Amino acid sequence: MTDSFSGSYAEARQKFLAAARSAGARIHSYGRDDLRGKDGEELACDVAVLGADSAETGAIVISGTHGAEGYCGSAILHRWLAGHAGKAPADGTKIVLVHAINPWAFSNKGRTTENNVDLNRNFFPTAAGYERTNPSYDALVPFLHFHELSASADLANHKAYKNYLDAHGWHIEGEAWAGQSHRPDGMFYCGRQPEWSNRLFRRIVQEHLGAADCIGFIDWHTCIGAFGEIVYLVFDDEGTRERIAAMGWWGLSDGSDAAFKAGSMPKYEGLLCKAIRQELPGSRIAGAVIEFGTVDDYTLFRADRLDRWLMNEGRDDPERDLLRETYKDVCCPRDVTWRRMVLAEGPAIMDRLIEGARNWNET
Image (tube, rainbow, N blue to C red; front, top):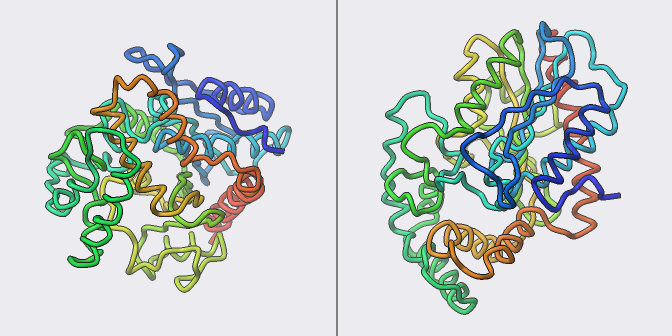
């Protein structure tokens, strides 16, 4: 059964809220008064909370950081809630489920905020973090930016892109992906200030986890990894108690295929998950960005280029809605076997997070 998945933001929101009510969760909705969704619908980030407000252990699970990837995260939250209706969390544990932290992008089936900001490059503790010129990104602009749709040009650019990195070093790709502030029309744009979703997420952390001494987190994503693969991104340094804890919750090791080794982790800057520690420096915090792989690298290359083009040169394309649906299908495939895997594995991964955080707090 794959009915936890939705075809639109409005449908996903309705399913999440209904499942949260059935599970007895306390619901907090944070709406946007300044924007409407793709179909004129209300936009909001909804938070479902289970467990006592005074709980010492917290678990927070976030969906929709990268808009269209939220269709996968939303389905997992819906299925987990459906499976826990009538089940109270263990004493001393509080569970916070964040649905569509980036609602405009979720509704519009894209990656970035309405300002073309990559929300997962937007979280910095000081204003200095937003000054991020990136020469490596500039070097890749000829391959990543385009002005007209063309399947043949996509193929030629992908070949040229790989040839360039073969000749100059693939480290350039990792450096480019870290984020940049000087190309507002580009990918991985970190913005010049905190976005609405940034400010709201910090508020959610303070309001709902401020009393917790020990916190575990998951930020659900898609597209990293092969089709059918689950990839765990644990950004803490090797040997730290936080990395040891998170790796243990999901039975990972630095030699496993499922987790990036500490020394080869992507050097992304401005990550949403790091804001939890920025807001609650006195708490123990561990967890992971968890990715469900979806497509091959060429298909993802085309999708990333398309998403950037639709936010800029392609805003008025007459087939914009169809192209946005194409992008969504890369982030959340319609393949039944993939969706069954997500709904089988996702809730179980959440259960291990909650149990792991509770046990960690007792050590």
